[in-house]
Length: 123
Image (cartoon, rainbow, N blue to C red; front, side):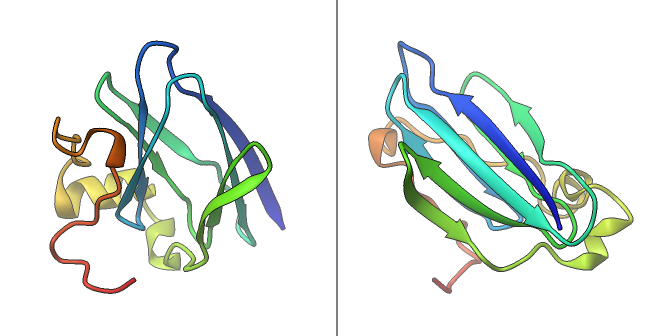
């Protein structure tokens, strides 16, 4: 089993807007929060991170599942593994090619940034 733990800290002056691919879901965290991402897969790989001022996108690798933890508490669990077909290209390259860049939260979403794209009806 290949595992990776990645810790991200929200800036002291603003929220951290995380977008998770290929799960197509976004979560916002208050300023100063340390978010721990725990990824696991039977395939070798690492999480890819694409950071802008507005949001940070995190991409899983082939076969990867992901857990989001804050202060020891499980916030979200992405148990649907990344499709093995994504193994030929990075997940970021596949998602970008098919759907374009991840969304940027609007002012209205603000602290409640928990968004799914219009095409995702489940969950």
